[in-house]
Image: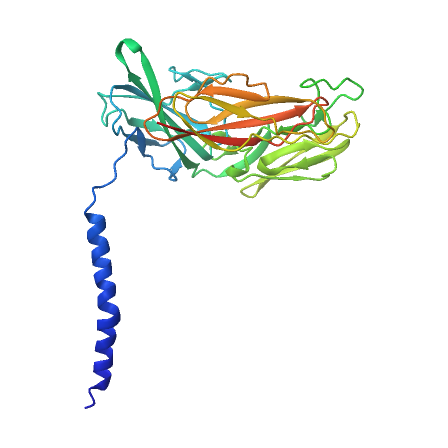
Length: 359
């Protein structure tokens, strides 16, 4: 028997396989020699970021406190992915456009500590943000807040049965001949969102305006009502147009009659500036100075916060807004939205800017 083939295979093993196994073993040994990475600040561990939850169910919220000490309680809030961060409120039964009802309050006595049973919103589907805000006692110095936030997807097992619009039908837009003062009437270039809801087989009516919930929009006349990204609509001409909304095989249509001043007007463009990193305790300036209007008209500004624990935002209706960067134990991201409007009432598409606050 010729032993050459065996010799060749053996050489291949020695020259290729053994070094590869040795390298993998050394890599494993090197990684294993380091301790498991731990959080240095409050971190939501359950539900995990990116997880999918079912509407109306209850999950057990867990947080890792890291090295943050002196925590008194942790409040949990649910927000839509692009919802404005609203005023914090202890009362879970609170309602109103300027209040975010607390979903759950965790304390040290609970099991798990500062966590517990957390109900997934019953009337929302799509991407949701879970915000946990911890209150830390500083003795005579009072308290300060820290936060963590995760993005999850909320789905329902119930079937969608019908779509409707929470508005008058047909929808009348504009009042021709009237002065187009900012914020008073609809005009060319006005951007708006339709309040679209759907009925489901579990008897719950849910908001489905966002394309993230599976909703798509189509306009019968793009030269009257234009469909923009994100489920936004824009008035671009006079006349009648039909908007058709589709979600999970169901459709609904809404007729719109547009009658606005037809003076040509291109919408402005919002520019919220470049994302930045800042130190805790510093004064942060948000600049919309690079926003522009094609006709060179003066602009009206509107800043709002859409991510992170609520911070007092100064000069929210000016070209430059500002806030004081809060104390953090690890880098945390705050996101802000800017919309600008010209004197004739045309709106910009929203612009966003992220501010990373570091310890």
